[in-house]
Image 1 (cartoon, one colour):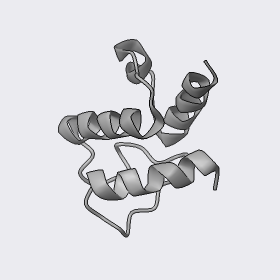
Image 2: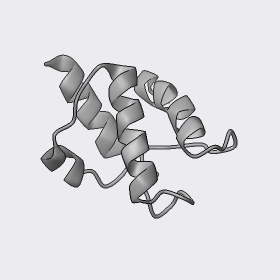
Image 3: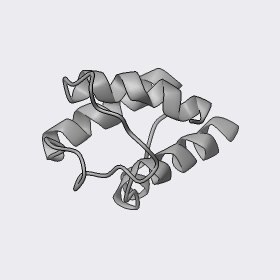
Length: 79
């Protein structure tokens, strides 16, 4: 598990109120129960706070799974 994925795990636990939830790069809204538009906003906000970054709307629209989010976080942190 990558360092970023390890840092994302507790965010997902908090947002989805489930300490049993285990995310992988392939995890997505279709594979995680309760991932709807409202939880997505909460998730994005929490990720931005944790990593000290801001996502543009266009960037978020391109995300298909947790792996895409991890890649985007890495790009943002490298800027």
